[in-house]
Amino acid sequence: MDLEQPAEPVGALDAPVVPPAGGPTNATADDDAPAPLEVIPLVEPADGIPAVIETPEAYAEVVAAFAAGTGPVGVDAERASGYRYGQATYLVQLRREGAGTALIDPIALPDLSALSDALVGVEWVLHASSQDLPGLHEQGLRPSRVFDTEVGARLLGLDRVGLAAVVAELLGFGLSKEHSAVDWSTRPLPEDWLRYAALDVEVLVELRAVMADRLAEAGKAEWAAQEFEALRLAPPALPRIDPWRRVSGLHAVRDARRLAVVRELWHTRDENARSRDISPGRVLPDHAIVAAAQALPRSVDQLSALPAFSGKGARRRITLWQQAIDRGLALGDAELPSVRGPRTDAPPPPRAWPDRDPAAAARLAVAREAVIELSVEHHIPVENLLQPDLLRRLCWSPPPQLDADSIAPVLAAGGARRWQVELVTPRLAEAFVTHE
Picture 1: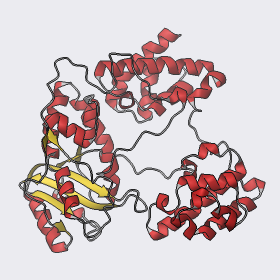
Picture 2: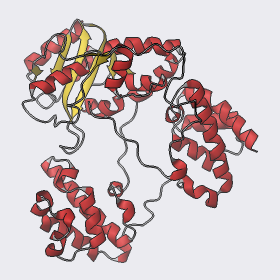
Picture 3: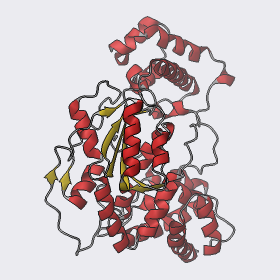
Picture 4: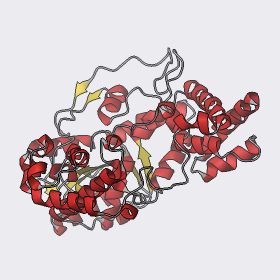
């Protein structure tokens, strides 16, 4: 299981909102909350470290065992983020009562659809399923039902929602995470890594049971069910427009010619990384791309003199990088990328709203305050009550009437779940009326 990803940076008026003191967005403030459990380290899987399944015969036995098992199945997947190109799955872990734990090599066994067929109707318990499901789908693994313990933790308002933290808080077990960011494409996988992988699914089903009880007690079981189903049915992510614009440090590149150099270097790096199945950042780091775009070297010698290109990896393909730079320098003005970026239907950054549309800026201010209040009342992070982008779209391009009957369909069309629409709509309508 990968480490949690940090949130993307946002502008000043678009930053995550911190609620008033005494009312955290994602921490339960209940004085009657149970005392923290004493944490007992989990150091060995209950059934030992299972052998990795990598032959059709062994896989057939796993399918039969899991089909005969009972109850939900805990599922996890390991990738090689930061080492390999893309987000392919390199290990699949499963555990079910009566079947034990299975560690499956999806490189040796790319089609795991027989396991999905054997588990039709069975609930799959995952942590941060949005990270794992796309890769599992590529292996033919598609759950009938999902329970996501990270989303459940968010709805419960837990302070920390990583798997180790949630297991410690709700079950009192300590999970070590020192192998979460290793190169899972390594073969053979070291025993310590396999132990870690088996432990990651050891208590998922038990965690699900405790969490389900907590959600029911909080009146949030139906909210969670809607979130889980939305995750299960989520369509594949659309390709990004101009993905090269996500280069870290791009904000320092301010003219079209230099942006063209960034674009050429990014595409050259991407093609090279894809062909070699290596993470692009290991081929050429982002800071080297930005340094080259700022310096605009006209020769290999000039490029080699840049400190960002002093490493062996960058120098080994120095001619390739200079050729990319030369292509960017040779483009005609009409071929240069826009400094503003591609046109989208998204609202402008909120920091620009006071100048461009003061009324919209005022709507956003009162709307965000209303969502903060709900966040405090229900101990749910603001972003889990309503996607910030959807709230911005509502405030920037509002319907003719900002009443509940008009707001609800806008939120539903934007992807808000039914529970979110029912909870947020009345509060937003009230806030807009008060504002007017």
